[in-house]
Length: 62
Image (cartoon, rainbow, N blue to C red; front, side, top):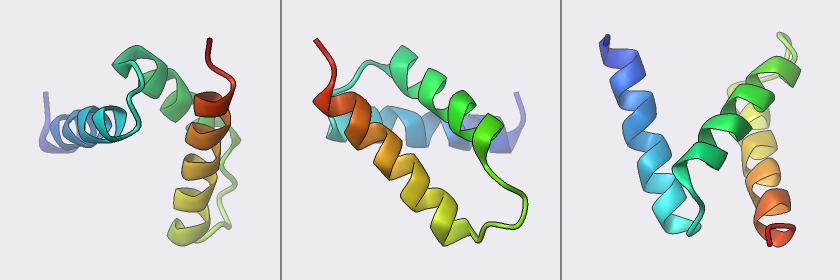
């Protein structure tokens, strides 16, 4: 496992704990967000999109 993948997992764990969401859901959200992220978006816009996805799924979870 390279450093980037390890760091990504660390961040996912931290964010999932902050929002009280399962890690598996966070991984799925990240993969979905990567698929729909446009190349010409800034990193700030991508972060906001990720946060919006997390908030959306947090509100709609069972």
